[in-house]
Image 1 (cartoon, rainbow, N blue to C red):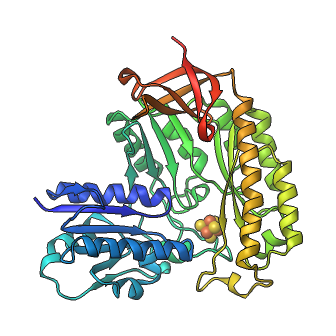
Image 2: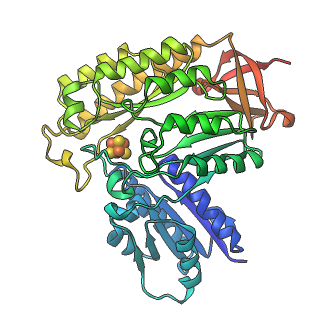
Image 3: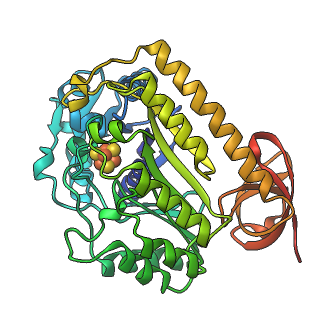
Length: 430
Ligand code: SF4
């Protein structure tokens, strides 16, 4: 039996796509082994969000090549799309491809052992118009479902539109069929994912709210979470729907990037701080215990100390629960390369430290504010130190003593005590 090992870097979408690619290999009789083991095939689903992500991709290829110099190494994902020649030159790489559909994988499997040359098969971003479905099943309690791909926004610092192409989506009917099949597989929770999910419907004349209503009507799936959604596309109607539909979890991930209007405009974001504040305040008014995570880019070219101070003040003033921050890294082909002033590595680190401490405080305050309250938790299968884990509806990580009977069940608990890393111990309510 031939073996294949997978390594995924980057976002949830990549994980969903790797999961789908792995199913194609399994259908062809492959056995999946860990990436740390010798395998006949290695598949790297790469990321290119920062230069560090590219470096991690190169390291993963080097690791695979050292484990088995004769292995067929296949690289897909954003790094492969954006820098195919650079990736193809890495020792051991045999295939570099962009669109990871079933036909492409089967063609690679069939031709791999006879092919001597490194094959590159990437697609110019303007020609990437086909939607390739994908989902991952995680630990078989919750699934990430890709409902949209690509982005037409071209923010000044971002290469994703060049790597993933134009915004596109399947029809609502196709998404509903996928959700039904996840329900038939025993999944309880679906995370609705994409690159710019609020843009859903652009290619089918539908919209994201219609999608939410259609999937919520599927029997079997009890919880839905909305992945990251742009503030200008998170309509008040969507927030009102989440507030009233029990299957929609009170959990939002809304990219902010900067709390300074001048910088938001410069980097090409499509909202200002007033609109952003309105969205946060509406969520909190309608769903007071909702979890709200935000994204911030730190140290983008053009960000002056005064602009950063505005961001700090703005973020401090928001009732949010978590900050995902990433330090800006210059990306070839993007408009931000020309922006000044350039932020030094030391300044970036200092700014990142400030945001990190705000995040820690906001998250601790959010978790502490829920102690003593009752929430529903979907329990997962992993066991660690005699405990098992799960997330509340509003995305608080909960630990209870391990009980096999609880796996993939949704149970009410009382949150009792914060332990390490803001995990909360809880008592199960019978
Ligand atoms: S919205 Fe902006 S940051 Fe997000 S993927 Fe599109 S271009 Fe990149």
